[in-house]
Length: 125
Length: 151
Image (cartoon, rainbow over all chains, first blue to last red; front, side, top):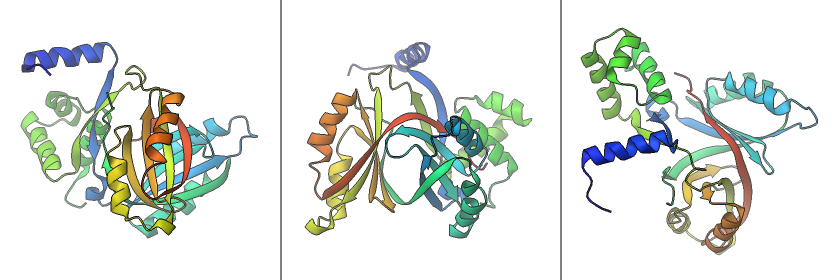
């Protein structure tokens, strides 16, 4: 890597933005520090006989504030939601009152997060 | 939690959505002075509530067309220490995240690959050869959105 001055770096960054390689920038929040000690991954299978199952499910899931991530897949799982809660009692309340009321679900499986061993968004370029 | 007020929450909401808003822009939105905004942002950073800044990249433009999530179950029989598995899996460059979970699987991995053939190579040569690895389930990511959360 050649030596870079701040001016060179800033030029390169704006080029990466113009080319659409850098799409945006966002602050990463440590939810535990804000008192959200529980994180659960919900792996959901949808009833695909309903033609608008995906759209209607996603629209409803977006309205739950404790859902911090929504992913869709090809595979055994259709959708995954990351849900945060203050404690297990809080999680149970969110699960019963909000998650279970989401439309078109045929199966839900939960994974409780214990720890994050590696977390980098670095690409192997 | 009680250490942070409504203004902090609004600030976090704005920053986690558009991290590159200038202090000036934040000050105008919140109707506060720039130094006051700076002080609050610094406090959130120093206390670790803001862990850092994430640059959002277009992975496809960089040649990484496929993201796969793997659920990995360790096979208990061999008695491989968790640390050995964790160390080996973390060393694979294509594995972006490793989460230890409780449920049907022991670990959840996020893997990036150039295409499906590249993913197959990573799976066979790198993942399936990890110490202690048992059942593996793969789900190919179609779409992903981060939400603002309960702020």
